[in-house]
Each structure stands twice: as structure tokens, then as C-alpha cells.
Image: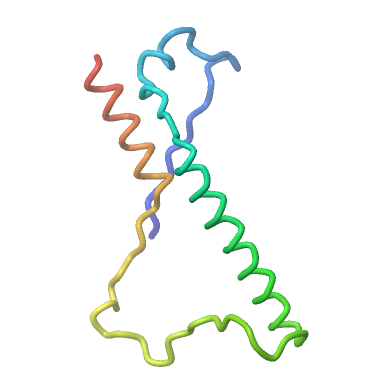
Amino acid sequence: SPAQKLVFNRVNGKRPPLLLQQISAPEECYTLAHEENVRFVYEAWQQVEQQLDGSQSGESACGPVQYVEKTPNPGLKNFVPIDLEEWWAQQFLAKIENCS
């Protein structure tokens, strides 16, 4: 059975006044080169998704091909992908516990 996900509910619909600011990591500074790289990858991925959608509906004969493994690797039989939301929630709780 899948693990239960953590759900954070606000008490009385209010945010804690300073707790959130004290725990959160300092803001990261992004360089212009970083932003250009992110924009390039995002735009390139959008093109691939559009081409994949077009090829699935029969619009295009060439373009990207979605890879699907025909015979699964037996070594990956028990592979479970990481749940990033759960991992971040655990990190957040660990920071809170360490600050207390």
C-alpha cells in the first residue's frame, strides 16, 4: 500500500507570523545565464511535447519518438520512483524538529 502523504493545514486559516520566514532557506540568486538555460530547456521541451502530440494524432510522420521499453529490465522490477513532494515534506519537518 502506498505511504500516506503529509498534508499541511493552516491553523484557523492563518499563517504562523515569523516561523515560516525563520525556517525557509535564503533566497537563491539566479544569474542571467541560468535564466537563459532554463528558458532554452523549457522552450525546447514545449516544442517536443507539441511534436509528440502532433505525431500521436497523425499530423506528422517524422519528429520525436516516445521511447517505450518492450521488455522491462528485470533488475528494475522492484524500482519505486521517489515522491519528491513527500521527500520535501520530510526535509521541511526535519528542519522544524532541528530548530526546536
